[in-house]
Image (cartoon, rainbow, N blue to C red; front, top):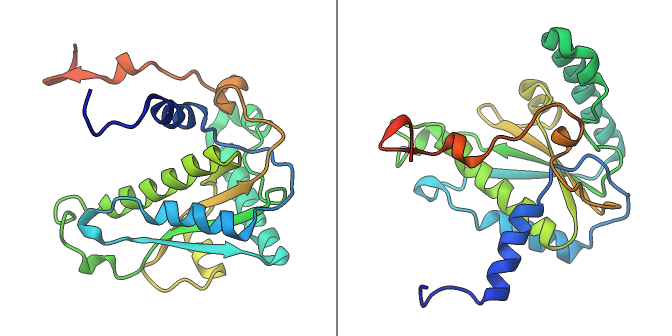
Length: 216
């Protein structure tokens, strides 16, 4: 084992947070203490980013009327998604897809504007800005789980409509509506699996050696 490894208890805690992280939809209200929210956002801010561009921007939503308008955007997209799903539309409409009006904190995670100026690491893979923001969201997610808080990533929205609602500059793009706060309990497995929407596939199906499609 590497001399730089954490202790067994510390390693177990990290793997536990990863294994028990859930995309939460059910929240119990309450609140997130300011110092705890600051700690979680600092963890997000420590994420890796290509070329150290730090493309993430977080908007904390504190106005109740704004929450309701964001929820309305999500509901509009939920209906459009159901229509696009065809035969599975009724099944989809039975799923709970967000906890916007129930969570203690609501955040919008977005990509900054003027990202085209950052070429380092993005010349052939411009989407690495999105990958960097995703790393920040994952940091926030895992830190929240370690602190006993639930978090849900809502992606059912029109990004242009949400950007306009939040006064984002041209070129900025919202990627996630993040519901954060206390929960009664964490799902024992991914909610979509529990609801029978899909079945998670094992790592073995996604691990190749040397050539695409060749298993180890």
